[in-house]
Length: 162
Ligand code: THU
Image 1 (cartoon, helix red, strand yellow):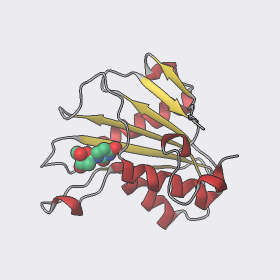
Image 2 (cartoon, rainbow, N blue to C red):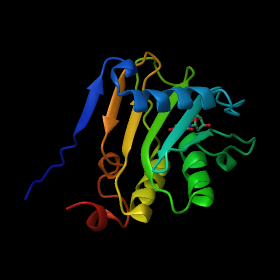
Image 3 (cartoon, rainbow, N blue to C red):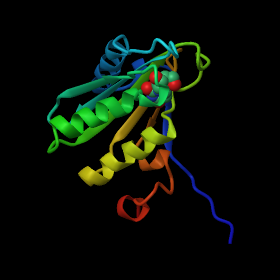
Image 4 (cartoon, rainbow, N blue to C red):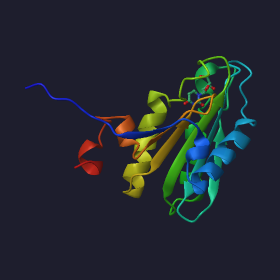
């Protein structure tokens, strides 16, 4: 029997069409992007989390001369939140980037390893959260859940989705 997935997301021409609470998160992601340590890829990524207590947690990519030892911005932010605010849930994650690695009209789409970690956060907090992705020319898409970005994620399908 052939089956298919369909994934809903919302698209905007510019992030300034988002609600003001989301725009604040975009600003935080842009701000922390400048702290990226990316001497090897020259690709700066910023990730900002709006927590359920109103706090904003920020992370940027941190590279290493032993390449695999570096970490993406999303995981820096999510692991910081897990370590420092373990009882507080994530409501929204916003990711931005700057650099030649991807075309300016391409949405910054998290790598597979980050998606698995993003899904784990939903499992841990038993609650989905929104994900805002932005291109270097300000095009924006919003997902309602990390699981939507990683269908059939290892170990979690039945827990999160109907
Ligand atoms: N990177 C992130 O931080 N997040 C992503 O979603 C994709 C890639 C980082 C890893 C590395 O430091 C640089 O961007 C180039 O891959």
